[in-house]
Image (tube, rainbow, N blue to C red):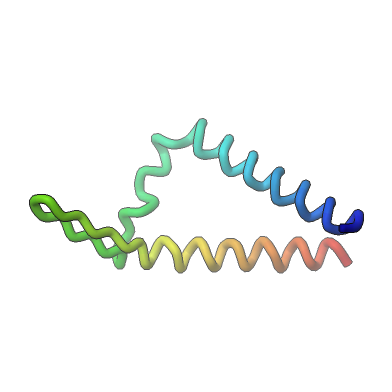
Length: 75
């Protein structure tokens, strides 16, 4: 391991803490996450299936943008 690896681990930890703080303080405002149009939800007696397709696409786009911004700032 080198110092660059340590920097990335610290950055990942900070991002996790930031997301945790946002969820902790704004959980009542984020109720729409996981209930977007396109998220598949099947609920029957004794059976529950949930596949958050739209939520994961939006999360993927957001994470990609954040990574690109970090790479641009790191140069």
